[in-house]
Each structure stands twice: as C-alpha cells, then as structure tokens.
Length: 461
Ligand code: UD1
Ligand code: CA
Image (cartoon, rainbow, N blue to C red):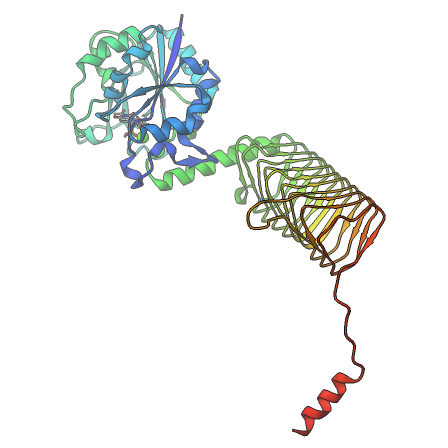
C-alpha cells in the first residue's frame, strides 16, 4: 500500500484583502503552508508530498523549497476540485491519498494518522475529517445518512438552500482511495454559487455511485480552523502560541504571563527557566535550565546556557551566550557573537560579530564590533572599537586580564596584549604589548581661580 499527500495551496485568499498569497501569511513565525508541510512530513517522507501551487507560485515554492516537497502547477484557480485534477499525474501511482488544505495550519500529525487509520479500517472510498465548531459560518456542511457515519453530501455554505443546515463542518482534510477519487474528478461541474469545481462535490458523486463515504469528527475543533481573514489569522497565531507555551510549561518552564509572550514553535527551553511577561523567543532559540529572561526582551535564533540572566529590553540575534552570563538591561547582541560564561554585558552595550571570553565585562555604553575580548578583561564605560574605515571592516583583539579605561577609542586593526592597561579617554591607533600601559590623550589645561574671576566679572555687568 502506498500513500501520497496533496496540499492545496494555489488560491489567492481574496478574503484577506492582501497582495501576498494566503499560504505565505505567517502564524507562529512561519508561513501557514510550512505548518501543514511539517505535519505532513511527520506522516510520509517529503518525496511523497505534493503541493499544488498557482497564485504567486514562485514565491510560495521558494518559501518552502527547503522542506524537499514536490510541486504541481495549477495555473488558473478554478476551485479545489480543479486543483486536484491538476495533480492527477502526481498521485496516480499511490493507492491512497490524503488531501490537506494549505490554509488549515494547526492540523497535527496524530490527527492526520488517525484519519488515515479510520479510512483504512472503514475501507472507504473517501473519508472526511469534520468538526462541530461553535461558529460554523463559512464552512462546507456535512450531511450524513441518519444515525450513521456515512456522508451523503458536503454542501458549501453559499449553496445551502433555505432551511438546510448542519452543525458539522468539512475541515478541508480528506483521505481517498486514489482510484475512486480519479474516477469521480472528471464528473465535477460548476453548477454552484461560486461557479467553481468543488472537491467537496466528490462526496456526493461517490455516494451516488454507491461508494462508501464516511466522516471522522476531530476531537479538537480548534485544530481544523481555517484562516480566511486577517482576524482569523491572528486568532490561529494565538492558538498556536498558546499550544507552544502549554507544552513548555508542562515540561517545567515557568512562563509568567504566557498570553503576552511570543514564542515560536521550534524554541526549546529547559525546565526551571523563567520567562517574564512580554518576551519574544523566536526561530530556533534554545534556553538552558535556570536561565531567566526578563520583560521586553527579544531573542532570535540564539543559544543560551544555564543560569543566564537577560535583564529587561535586550535584543539578541544569531548568537550564543555562555552559562552564568549577565546581559542588559538594554544590551544589543548582534549576529555571530559569542558571549562567554559569566561574562557581563551591561546597559547600552552593542556587540557585533565578536567573541567575549569567560568572565569579561563591558558594563556600560560601549560598542564592540569584529573583536575578541580575552578572559576576565574589563572594558570601561564608553569604549568604542573603530572597526570600519568607510570601506573595510577591521579586527580588534584584546588579550586576557586587560583593562581598557573608560571612553577609550580603539582604532582597528589593533591588538592589545594580555594584562595591558589603557588609560581612560585614550585614542589607541597602534598595538599595545602585553602588560604595557598605553595612554593617549591631551594634557589638561588648569587655570586656578579662572571660574571665580569670570563670575565676578559677569556680576559687574
Ligand atoms: C473549503 C471547502 C469547505 C471547507 C473549508 C475548510 C471547497 C469547495 N470548500 O472552503 O467545504 O469547509 O475549505 O477550510 O473545497 N485552492 C487551490 N486552488 C483553487 C482553490 C483553492 O489550491 O483553485 C486551495 C486554497 O489555496 C486553500 C484551499 O485550497 O489552501 C481551500 O480553498 P479555499 O478557497 O480557502 O476554500 P474554502 O472556501 O475555505
Ligand atoms: Ca479556506
């Protein structure tokens, strides 16, 4: 028995009133379609997944190409039935096919598998995943043969006749015997309110042909909610984030106000980490045990060790932070930085593409770019690495146990040896050997009594 999965993603999403294809709109930090592909990939290998693309096909393909799925073109979007007609070649060698909608993103692999197992057990021609949501508006409705799990027809909301109704809706997710599906597809027509070829009409066609069409009601109606409007997208985003927060809390992570945090689904957090309100943890961020992330911090694709403290309002991207390090408030760690264990990066300090070794400190108002700062070195307030000459970027290397006085200007390329000492307010254009003192600043001019004389003169005017 062979199984393929088709994902319908060619529609424009007219109801979003957006220029971007619907399946490229994001929830939980990834396009809608990517969520569906992730769920499908947990059921069959990517080589057995075919995505039907049409509207903005090139952008849609580019956004999900890394997943390794195949693509089928539907150049004109004449309806969901037409979409599947376009994919007939791709699925004809598979005995069974699961069809998912690119705009129903919360579907879980467990539910897809349960649908397929039920379909197999029932030996059905078509099995429809259904639900009874609180508000069925907009969905196709399921009409069962009384008291059975057999379905006579799916009728789109716009085609319901007066008095015709059903609380059970079509999720847009189905399992088919491929041969039965292919036998019905040529008989679709556009005699309906939207003048489209509906995939949903296949249910009535197969039923009329004496085939077995059954429904399986999903345990959780929220899982099959579709996104047709921006407001629905926002509510799906919220459900997905609530699901992620719940999973993390169940594994021992404290999230103080989960409703205020934005945590992407692939974020990993160890037990006993604490996430304060209004924190964003994005991409593939990993956080170790005992680490505390204070409010208003945004962390994207970073790895944080154990017992790290990130104080309020920090921005961290594409970097790693060692055990016991303390950052912020208001620290900015830019891509490709490595902050060593127990290092301190304080307020208004920007670090770019730099390696800060164990126990080093830069606590106030500093820019460190393209640099390496040795173990236990102290960088005084207001120190600036001048890494850019307007054309090229240059490196600064500072050894261990060094002391850089406040307001130093370090002109790269530059090397400052282990244990060296730079006097406050120095401008350093050339290398400083280990254990040396470097001071480069103007001598102060001091005129005794000058200020009081000036005040006396002004008072006479
Ligand atoms: C569809 C179902 C409806 C169901 C609902 C569940 C039909 C006719 N109706 O309605 O019964 O309750 O999903 O969410 O199928 N697409 C294509 N090519 C097309 C048209 C659509 O690939 O020509 C894709 C869309 O990109 C989308 C999916 O198919 O991912 C569903 O299309 P959409 O227009 O959103 O259908 P609904 O009106 O939501
Ligand atoms: Ca839809």
